Amino acid sequence: MFTTYQEALNWIHGRLKFGVKPGLKRMEWLLEKMDFPEKNIPIIHVAGTNGKGSTISYMLHMLTEAGYDVGTFTSPYIETFNERISVNGKPISDQEMLQLANDVKPFVDQAEETDLGGPTEFEIITTMMFLYFGKYHQPDFLLLETGLGGRLDSTNIVTPILSIITNVGYDHMNILGSTISEIAAEKAGIIKQGIPVLTGAENEEVLAVLTKTAEEKQAPLLKIGQDFQILSSAHHEKGELFTMKTAHKKYDHLSIMMKGQHQIKNAALAIAAVDYLNHQEKTSLNAEQISKGIGKAFWMGRFEQIYNNPKVIIDGAHNKEGIESLINTVKRHYPNQKIHILYSALKDKEYAEMINRLTSIATSICFTTFDFPRAASSEELFSVCDFNEKSNSASWSQAIEKMLDVYKNKEDLILITGSLYFISSIREYMKKK
Image (cartoon, rainbow, N blue to C red):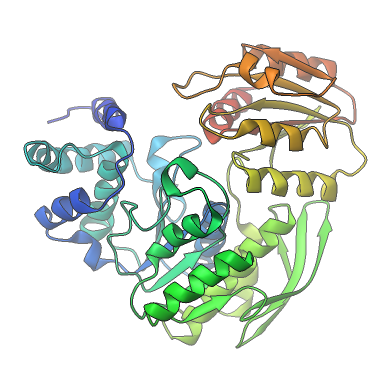
């Protein structure tokens, strides 16, 4: 038995040594022992390379605006570990997390004695989440984000009421495959027999894979640009404006706080999902609730301004698609400003290509590292960059302090980007300031 929250957390994090073990056998075993709590929850399952968290945030805010009780399961966390399991946008308490860890630990110990071996950190937190929403706090809906891929992801143990695949790009290729079609097939693994699926993917190879899988599973597939469309869009100082339509309704003059053309697509996907649930009479949201909900949606660490003088924006762009969206958003909202970038990445990412793309908008770029086992050193990042105005610092806090000092009272923009784990550390530090 754990007596404190910190003990429970240390135990969960200690499971990291088991690494990533794709497959559902351990999850099936654990949930059977707990009498299948996941079967008590109406679930919307969300996979994709980028945009999962934002899409979930849009749906969460629309549904809560209409008075629904909504659970979310997301990763990684930005501020507190508990935010991975949240109710109506609020992380569960330390006491609830402690209770769940104590509930789950005996079964984890039993699993270790079997041929299945020890469950990973992600499998344990996923089991705790299913137990929480299936037994202790049954929501009207659970918005469930995959951890990695889809087909063999620990969350793919469920039969949802709706599946969403945001988009498919090149990430986690060491696990998911080296071609876009292979990665798409892994994401398509969340498509279930007869369960409708919506996608924001636009790549033709990806759509071919999703269409084939949906047809095999007899699952209705709704695609952006075909079954629901963005009719017009524009940006303003505080975000984006757009109009869209689905097969059932037109939604005019929608406004979102999250910046970037990609966020318009994420919002449209979320609205199309709610519109579909409305049409199936699983939800009952009116146009005002939808409009107000998406207008309030926000996602930490995604093109988020965290400081004013000088202006500092953080963005967890940790793969090629994320970097492209970031570059497009900077060009869209800050076309004439000098951009000073602070960058750090994990060593298992294809960072050379991402750095090369970032220099296209940079006035200067500084490379740093952070306290994480898989973090690349500042020298490793510095050495692959061909940009003249480059520097490196082993201390990210010193690098930030220097940038804040140099660019104070200037119109220049400081952009801090790279690994979400890095962004989490930065955000915590800057909040204290």
